[in-house]
Structures are given as C-alpha cells and as structure tokens.
Amino acid sequence: MKSLTVCMYGAASDNIDVNYFRQAEAFGRGIGKRGFRLIYGGGGSGLMGAAARGVRAEGGDVISVVPNFMYGMEDIFSDCTQMIRTNTMAERKSIMEDNGDAFVIVPGGIGTFDEFFQILALVGLKQLTAPIILFNIDGYYNILIALLEDSRQKGFISYDPWKYITVASTVQEVLKVLDETAV
Image (cartoon, rainbow, N blue to C red; front, side):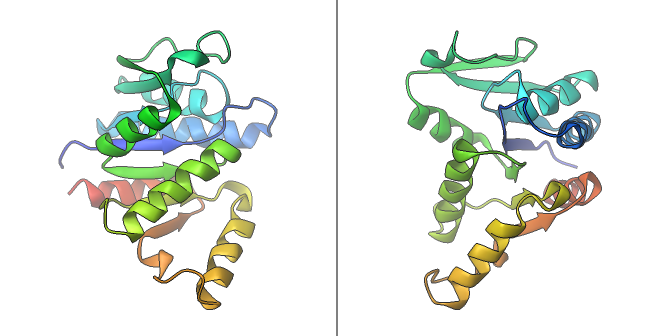
C-alpha cells in the first residue's frame, strides 16, 4: 500500500450534532491507523478539529494549511506535524489541491461547498486527477446530491459528476475508497 495524502474539507463550527463529530473523528482515526497523512485547513474546532485529533490519536501526520488572517479569528489545531502559513485563502486552497491524493468532503458550510465545487470543477476539466468522496453523514448532502443530479439531467453539467464522486454514508465506505486509491 502506497503512502496517501488525504485532503479533507469540512465544518469549523462546533454548533452541530455530536454524531458528526464522532464520525469525523472515526474517519481521522482510520486515516491515522493506515499511515495516511491528512492535509486540511488547520481548524481546531468543528469537524476539522475532530478529524485532526483522530489522526493524531493514532500517531498519524497532520498537515495544516492556514491563512495568516485566521490566527486569532479561529481556533487553530496546535498538534499538527506540519504547519503551512499562507497569505490568502486562494493560496491555501492551491496548496491543498496540489498535495491531495484524494479529497474527502465531510459536512460543512459555505467554505466547504466552495472547496468541493472547486475540486469537482478541476477534476471535471481534467486539471486534477483524484477521487472525490462526499461523506454523507446522516444524509447531510442529500439535497446537494439531488441538485447535482438535477443539473446533470437538465444539461447544465456537461459531464457525469458521478464518474468522479463517490457518495459514502459510513466511515468504512470512505476508508474503502481510500484503501483502493492507495493500492
């Protein structure tokens, strides 16, 4: 099994149901147990923090990419193995895109949607080759899935997004795709 860097996008908010935290941490533990690395936005709270804590609890490496303006604005995960500071969000996203071998989108808000759609656009335009895993915890992304399918059926998306996206409802399903990617 080859080394794999998993890029994760997800919520920074702590104001969400505890099950999301449990699933994100279990996902992180699965990454750590496999010796995969996590690269993500550096948050210490929300699902970002839960996943990072899970990876570190299993001795895995966590690469945090944080824009300078976020220091003092958001809780930053301090137990990372590598911290990359950027000047802008665009630079942050570029570093994460360039270093991710697979992209996992856990539930999140506007920032997560932005990151997901950018990755999907890059893959669809063949500027990036990597699996995209939509971690649909408790059906969180059902409406987004329906929107994508409706847009595809009406011709607004010129390619089949399902060629590039795997929808996973459990940690085991997410890890299975990552294991297959690492072979």
